[in-house]
Image (cartoon, rainbow, N blue to C red; front, side, top):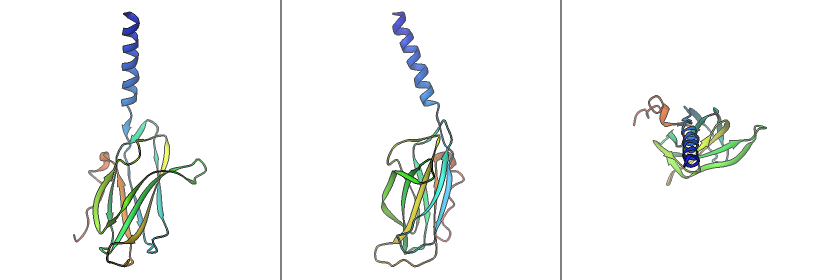
Amino acid sequence: MKKALWVLLLTGIFATQLWAQTEASMCVSITNTDDSGSHWDSTDYAIPSGQQITRTYFHYNSPSTDGVRLECYVVNGDGSTGTRIWAVNQTFCGCGSSSTTIGHTISGAQTIRFRVYRTWCPNFSISGGSSVVHFYTSTTAATCPPQCQGG
């Protein structure tokens, strides 16, 4: 009986340590001005040790004829792009917000790379200009992303 009690107590302590990780506070953005659809713009984000990202939110703002595609990768120790964590298999057109839990929980300490490229929306050609994408977590949602200007 005492052994079972100790196992239960140790299991509870271990589980508490697992739940002690906190959501990493993340708000990063990418401005994409390439209109070829073949060039990715990217930005890196270092997740601190003991923190994790369980859901990635993003806000996109492009000309109404343009869309953006999004991917997230692990950054290797040498700085190169590593394994893809998630890709959203959708083109986001105009201005709006969405989120993803695609892939798995991303824990620190590691660096991730968000990549964006601009592409055409259905029935339009790319207009030029720039597309901006902001990535953020629930802990930063109060300050990120900015709202679309003019609708």
